Image (cartoon, rainbow, N blue to C red; front, side, top):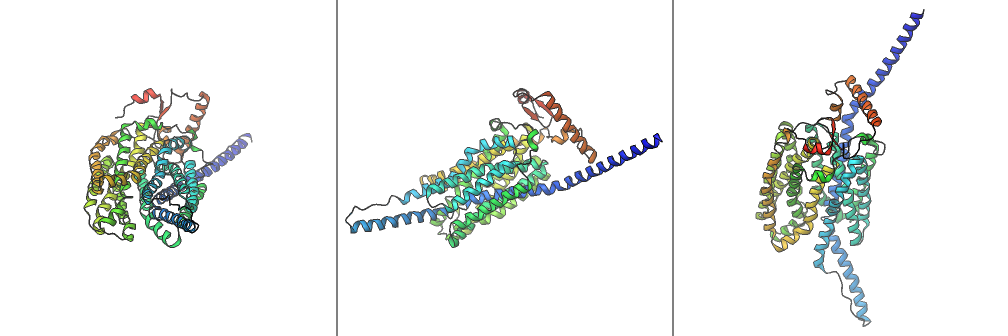
Length: 524
């Protein structure tokens, strides 16, 4: 009887264990099925945020010059009314204090204020992301962009426009950097990462190129407020979707992740510095042409308003082609990412030098398409390279490194609206383009420095560190979770790791190394 009772108890225990394992299997299976779907949703949310940010940057191009001019004309009209009443009463005449020659400066400063503040905030936002993850900064960025865009819609004077535009830069410093870093973090395989970042770059391009006609048409027919209110609504919807899908304030999975490498150390990494320089150089022609090409078209070829408004729209298609081509080439030949970037810079240089020779709108489309095609090659090849360099040479935390990338873009777009017009006035439009083209061609050989990046030791994710081999199936997945739990418990028992003694975590070795050791560590 005792043996039968023990057998029954053992059978019951086995049934419970079987049920528990079955339920565990279902949960893990469901999680594995949901992971790709969840990553695609995250990618969509990030792409919408990037699209929105670039829409906000370019949508004011056809709106602000006319709106500021209308504010000046309204002011002059009010002065005339005052003067007429003063003349009838023999009072002194009041002269208007809004000279038209200052409008270009005011417009340039307003255009650049977003990129300038973005440039100043990025070092802080990148460090913040390395500490708290990417979801909360992305939510903060979307909320700030929503509020600033609403303010911009209802602004009725230059000071309010300037404050709203600067706030957009603050939101972009969080949304842009965290979005790109989140993609790099979610897509760890190099081929998938290149493809995902390529999609994000396509959204960036679409936002930049469709914004001027979008803003110009709506401004002409329904007024200044409508385009900005539409973009504010998109920002709000994307923020709500972020709360529903990613749950930034409930997801604290990165609390046990290693602390990222400080941004100042990343900036002095020679490989990262070369990539950052290339990103700045290749975007200078676009950033400098956007505020100057419309006036040049009007004076040189007598371009109509619709031609000036649609100048960049045809270039969207070769940009997408460049993204697609680079992603395909990177999937098959990842060791030549540096070469794709160098070819892109040569194409940018040649296209920039060709722009001043164009005499008609149709001729101008060709070098502008070449310009955007080359930028697509450089961006799509080098943005994934930044994540790879962090994986290989630093800690696999991406906030600071993509803050450096955003700084690179911001330098070009902060200087463009202010410096480009001055160069055109003092040296000429042709000299501006020749200088930008020559800078890109001369910088292209510097990317040879990156040719050995793929020969460094490949990184390993946390999953491969905790397991001797990559987990295959349910057993290995449970084993990995058990080892993670044991590892965390042992760290809690041993106490917190002291700073300056073990402050660097290298994924490819699975060990904690001191700063002195890590600086001497060589990768074959």
